[in-house]
Length: 418
Image 1: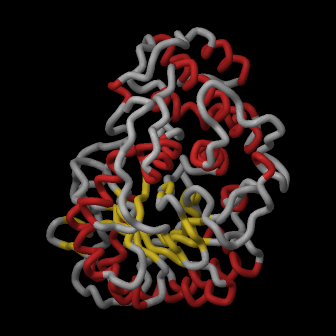
Image 2: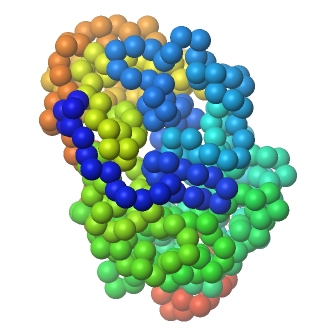
């Protein structure tokens, strides 16, 4: 997209999620192992105009302390800023038992508002305890519930995308979260898929149940669990959910890889907002483009390879501050192929980036890039894991009784994030 390109914005108001106003109506999807505090900060910098290409954040900015970037006031309830940025998945069992890794994962930058946590849970009692802990200790301002994970190790125990098939249990879990969050005015939202497979669609029931139990919004990843991340998202399902769920916002997720995709989804489905996942992998500046698109402003010019190098270096700094240098650079490795996607970078140099272990080593590698190379057309489009469709592994007899409200044995997990 050229720098002077302007997309026609949709005619709609701001997204309201409980007390939070989100404009433009763009949400960073929770992604295990990806949407930690450093990555959320990087995406926010672009969304809030604190980071453009060709330079550092404004002078005097800081990622630490109460001031935050650009002298923003301390966080509080109210405006959703320039989007909503959700944490990676936090399991309720690990949270209530104060697992060390999980407690580190719920860290938020001092300027991050609203603080948004995604929870995974299968037991209404444990979910209720986790949300009460969040309320009592002021750990978050928004809670999103995960019912969309298609990973076999999760579905084979009845969790994730398998769980909405059990309508009563699904309702009990949502209700437990909503009731526990109510005293603090913390909104609970629910994210799910179309269903287990084409023969077992659950999204319309899930949307109506979540609405009835007090959820403040629902988000649909328009694929079945059996699709995982393959094929095309069925945006028509978002339209049908929007027709079925009428009193709370409906958000669409799936195949948003550029700003035009987001506008197209809103136009095609009537959804109240979009959830962006794989499209921002190695492209945190997508949130700046989405800001411009929803406002009808000229889109920022795509970055040169040298400007991508600056973003990559900033990401490394944030990860180093969050963890420590070696662990931070190790976490960065998974992002390298996404950042360099489509650029003419030799295989030897790519392998070196994928094995980087220090900031000095990273600087040496960044210095070997041809910084004037313009952003290539090949860098647009799908990225991240896609895989292929597969039969969903479920507990024995899982499909026998959708009204069974018993908690699936062994489905609770002590592992948060990726």
